Image: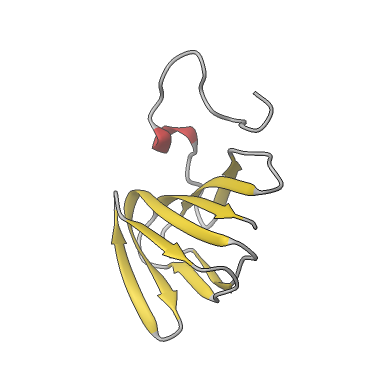
Length: 110
């Protein structure tokens, strides 16, 4: 495999089990090494967040475990495990706060 990394290939594994939370940190794990698609798994400790930022490609978030919110301007969009949300390229947004959670982030560059 040239473009995927840190993923099981001999047997299945639960996605959430690939990454462990650390107190007062946001931990990330890259799952791809492509110039056009970035796939990362994140775990956020209680109270942690990524403040407002944007990405040059369309991005979607799949909440793997826990609950969180994504803030788009003055809108707060709650998410629970299993929810998915797309954010268009170059749109400022923030994620996190509250209790700990795990999220898969996929950004597709043109």
